[in-house]
Length: 335
Length: 259
Ligand SMILES: Cc1cc2nc3c(=O)[nH]c(=O)nc-3n(C[C@H](O)[C@H](O)[C@H](O)COP(=O)(O)OP(=O)(O)OC[C@H]3O[C@@H](n4cnc5c(N)ncnc54)[C@H](O)[C@@H]3O)c2cc1C
Ligand SMILES: Cc1cc2nc3c(=O)[nH]c(=O)nc-3n(C[C@H](O)[C@H](O)[C@H](O)COP(=O)(O)OP(=O)(O)OC[C@H]3O[C@@H](n4cnc5c(N)ncnc54)[C@H](O)[C@@H]3O)c2cc1C
Image (cartoon, rainbow over all chains, first blue to last red):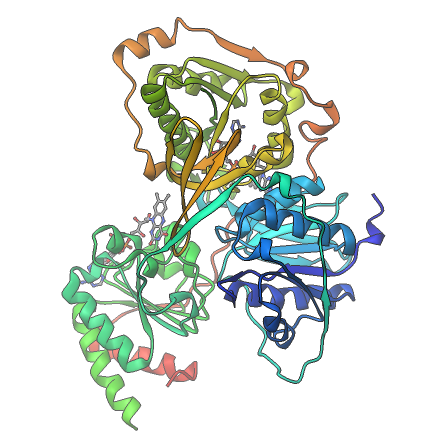
């Protein structure tokens, strides 16, 4: 394989019901860094039906070119239809790198596309970089339940593919004046392979916010105790303009819905401030929050592992600290 | 109906610790188990055996010790077990693993293939979809429910927003979520019989695939480095009373321009 023929960083711009997903914008942000290091361009690939208007948004967030595939076959996500389209885009445009969100869609689509292309795929990456000296693409990911990190390369095959969990990479600030090229691509579909039919989609009621989007998270664990304890956290969050999240222990106990769980089996978050209140800091919890800009931990056990990642560690009883802090913040915010 | 279930032997990652000095995984004393999602997949197959008389074959690729999970599968009710073991399989990434399993599947007779969604060690969730691609059959991942009316499979797939109902006829591959199929225990009779039954041991020559696609040679990805996760430099820990605690937090928030 002649690697030199393969150029540019491609992002699968996942959309659902016509709405471009946050993870797509995060990946475009990362793709920009990679493209700059390589002296290449960022391409976003937007598949769907009636979605062409979103191309502009992808440009604003950093795509140089948007490849739009607008087709009835792509109205809803179904594996084979999307695989055919992505595969043909890859064959036609020969990307050097191709990134997907590690969502239920991306993790279904990316391995199928990788196997059809006969190339490698690195899962759930938390770090993507171009080595300074050799300009090689290095993908780093956790394995063994978060206990081990591995750096993986795909030296002899192209494209080099990876999936990245939502919330891990950072979006660029959108720029409405950015200009980009928009290409309409028409794949040749082989409908004889469309053997799976989507019968219906059922949505479940969700909490009001996506915690991975919050700038400030007030997160509680078993140390907060019961539902009443969480009311105190909600009050604190309201005063400081944040959202409430929690450890898995509180989700398992039924005190919090699963969509507010932070960690390996919950969401990955990266707020400006993460309050870890009564959370011990199990490795599975750390996996979801340790990239936060600033971590403030309150725990009465000075040996709690959460303190190993905290920027500010307070050994104290949260039942007295939280109400006092809330009162004090009310005064600060009123200033 | 014939069902092929792919199962993997994994270290129980909840028991894994990192050696603080060498920064490597401590594997000693860590129990090996059947991957949880695969156990769910086997349970689903066995429910089809109970209901429709399906014949259930389990297959694993791994070292000779992986025999243990195949015996466990016998004890749960599997009819046939195959162990793919050969130096030539070693060092496989997901593409090479899926190629080996697909190569074995090509020599077998089946209507449905079931894998787990994800193995708890490699954690990639890629082997199922890649295997389906090699075999040119459809896949449905994140499966939380399955019905069959004699002709059509109706599948419940879990998504971030809720779930989807999908249907297909003919051959297919499903990747299964453990919590949806709480597995049965091994029966006492089953455990006794499990050691009388034969596990078929296959080398690379039994697999319908070019050797260049197996093992390290057939793996496009290379692990170039692995290391224990670096925790960031911790800040200062203060053992203080509540008032002092509040002062410290307020000044931190000011320093970070939050307030
Ligand atoms: C496969 C797997 C996946 C998992 N995924 C996740 C995940 O995604 N997210 C997650 O969070 N966990 C996850 N877990 C669970 C994880 O291992 C821990 O069990 C969990 O995070 C513990 O939650 P906790 O910190 O709230 O509770 P605990 O560990 O019980 O900690 C409670 C803490 O509160 C402190 N405390 C008690 N009272 C007070 C008080 N009055 N004032 C101050 N401090 C107090 C205690 O000192 C203690 O440190 C997973 C586990 C497994 C095996
Ligand atoms: C630290 C580390 C990181 C790695 N990262 C990557 C990576 O990013 N990309 C990559 O391609 N490879 C990677 N590998 C290699 C990968 O772990 C192996 O190829 C492994 O054999 C299969 O991947 P998995 O454990 O992720 O399985 P998954 O894809 O998560 O497994 C899904 C299902 O496939 C079936 N299955 C998987 N393996 C077997 C088997 N041996 N026998 C029978 N059924 C099986 C099971 O039903 C399982 O539930 C990594 C390995 C290590 C040690």
